[in-house]
Length: 276
Image: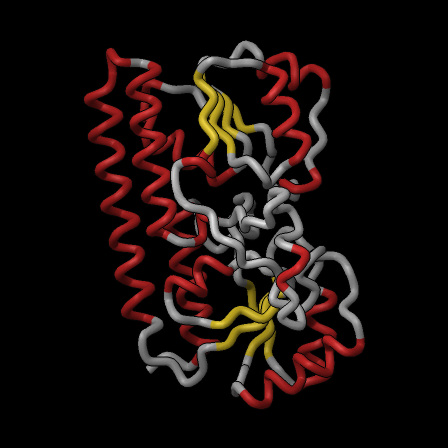
C-alpha cells in the first residue's frame, strides 16, 4: 500500500501490522508540501492495493492520486472534522492555511491526538473492508493505537493544565488543533510560508505579544529553516526550541516515531509555557 507522508505511514504501519507493506511517497527529511512526484511514482500509484493520504497537504500528491483511480483510496481528511484555523498572523483569518483546501481548512489534524485517533478508527475500518480476511487483526491493532493516542491526550491535558502562560510562538502555524485542544494560543511568525520573512509590523506585534503574555520561547521546526525564529528570539531576548510538526521523521527528530516525538513536543511546551 502507499502512504502520502509520515503521519499516514505511521497509521498504516501501526494498523496494518504484518499484513501491509507500506511505501511512503515522501522520503525522510523532505518537506512534504514541496514534494514533486516522478512519473515512475505516479505510475506505481495506480498499482497500489490501498492509498492512504491527507488531502490538502500535498497538491502534487492530490492530483496524482485523483488520476490513479485506485478503488481503495482513503482520504484521512474525510475521517474527522477539519476546522479553519488559518494563520494567526495579525489575526487575519482570510487566507486560510498555507496549504489548506479552498475552504481554508487546516490539514494538520495529526497534531491533535484525539482527532488522529478518530482518523485511526476510520483507517482501521477501511483496511478491514479492503482486506476482510485480516479484519480482526486490523481491529485489534486499531484499538491498541487508539489507546496509545488516548494516553498521549491524557498526558498533554494534564501537563498543560496549569501553565504560567498559554501563548506560544512558532515559525509556521501547524499547531492550531493542538492549541485548541489544550486551551493554548498559537502565534505564528510567518504563517503562510515557513521560509518567508515576517513584515516589520508583525515583528513589532510579536514583541508586544511576547511581553504581554510572558512568552519565553520561539519555536522552530526540524524540516524548515530556523533563521527567522532565531532572529526574532535574538531581538526579544527569548529562547528558541524545537516544536516538531511531525511531517517526517529524520535522525534529527527527538524520538523514533510519532508518540515519542509528540512526548518531546509536550516536554518542550511544558518548559516554554512554565507548567506547574
